[in-house]
Image (cartoon, rainbow over all chains, first blue to last red; front, side, top):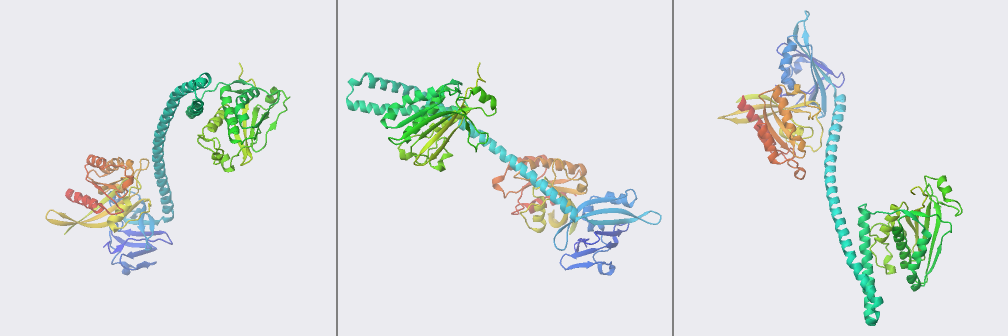
Length: 433
Length: 173
């Protein structure tokens, strides 16, 4: 009989429907706003009880057949009929309404008592809790989806962690290989270079002019090879965090002057005009002297290489307090001002020496400025100057500046020249002794 | 023809595909959208099972219960009167397999003679599978239950799994 009618209860108005059953749990009457739906026919609606109309398919049904959710609760039904149980309830029974939408019903059963308060059957009460049910369903759904997402993220995170560890191991292996290779190459290259210098200087008379010329070419290439291996070694040290610095008080003015003397042959050869300006009372800097020479060698060498013949290079040092706001220009300090005063005035922003190396070279395209100093990056117009390079020199220079507590940046107009700015902290005595 | 009615439950963690298996078995439909079940939904399907030299009609009352998890186990009251259960795990979620033991234990505590069939669902998601057939066979053997690799989406072995459970219930009667 159950198959004829689908137990669809749509309690749209009063939200409550009830059945009255006898002791044998057959439906003997009902109330409330009901709508029964035939499986193969149009919905049959009624607001008023119509026993005759419904008797074929509704009355006389077993409530267990009508409500299969009661299967397994026969013991509770028996206890209700015996007056041993005051109530029995099932929450969120799922049904579909005639439109095919899911509705949720709470079922509560009470004993039906006669005048002497003796149980005569059951009052079967259905309450439409679809609104609450849908909210609860959405909450459960969101909880479940969040859990699944969390699991998915957890799994993805584990996979990424594993992949990352693998890549780190490979990167470490690569760095170790490069480091060992560069280190092992340096010794024989340095030996070769030494013997070539020896031959070019002491055995010059024993060599034919073309041999001297060839040997000079070999020497230059060997020197370049030594630079590349040294750069590779530096990069692996920087990447591995193994670059050690020996910070000490350094007179930057003296350091730059000495360096320019070393570059004199190249300056003369290209007929460059080079000026150097530094105040006499410049405070000492706190830096690694060897690495600071490397910084200025690289920047000066670049300025010379990328500046055409008869061009100009200006190097200037000044005592400078960095601006608190990076968008504002800093404030140069009067050179006569005692350094101790400056440091006392602004301990949060320690004073620095700002070095400016300005050239009239080919310049750097605007689009490339932000990339300068990244490993293996070379400006897109570098080939115009016919200068070979690996893109490691500036990367090392920038890293060394930052390791020493300074910065490196560039300003440039393509075709007009470039200014490299370097800051190096002054030696304020805090680390002394 | 003899006719029997049996209550069976689908048990398993949430989102393993219990509702989809019922929908495939009862209505031969599939919907890709995941909609979590709240409370209980009872569906009916009659199957005819060959048994010895006769055929038996089984009215299966299929209880689709809200998926459980460690902190929120299936309500025991729903399990009362169940003759058996389809234990459902998700081949793409390894943690859904060991959970089956928990559901089986919960049902056996209420219904000691309950029969089980394991449905390892979502065979169609080949690339995402985290559980091997060997692991499923081991878990099913520990539960003393046959197992099926099912796909509610394409329909693989869904009918077989339900019919196998019906046959076990018939043999037990």
